[in-house]
Image 1 (tube, rainbow, N blue to C red):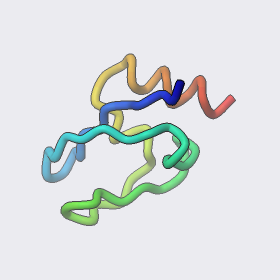
Image 2: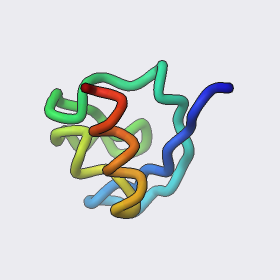
Image 3: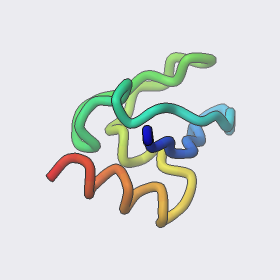
Image 4: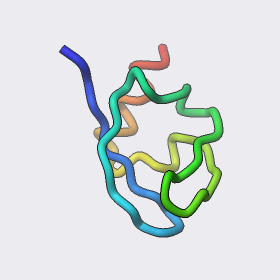
Length: 59
């Protein structure tokens, strides 16, 4: 079963879901697909649960 996380852009506030297999390491840069804001992926985690899922997947 594939895991998904909810993401939210801190700049434009776009919300979306993404498959873990499609995402980089949480410390790597990630670009918002709408506004192009570039930040570490961990800053796009919508909730603490989503951040934990990202971090667990990176281990």
